[in-house]
Image 1 (tube, helix red, strand yellow):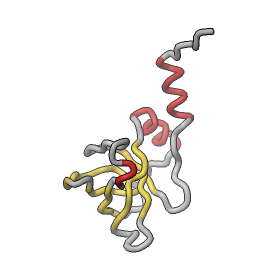
Image 2: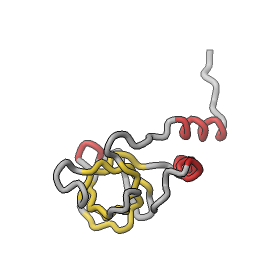
Image 3: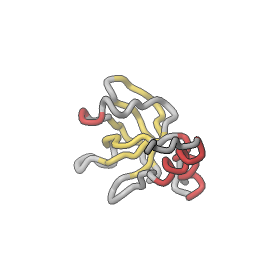
Length: 106
């Protein structure tokens, strides 16, 4: 039996259903400025501006540009100033988060 091809609408719905929500100390952020060497300034929903990096384990999976929405995990030490980017949201997922009210403060 052949696998059924997904329509564009079904693909978008699947992306929305798989949207990663913040857990624990994780926060959603907006990439403001790229600094090079996989470092960037991110404005977070908790009102703090953090210097974030893409860790080595995610370097090839996550390509981040200015204007992207990301999920940030603050560091245990200097958590108010620094963090790691662990997820990048796609445009359909960003719209979903806006409708849910998760992006207030950005």
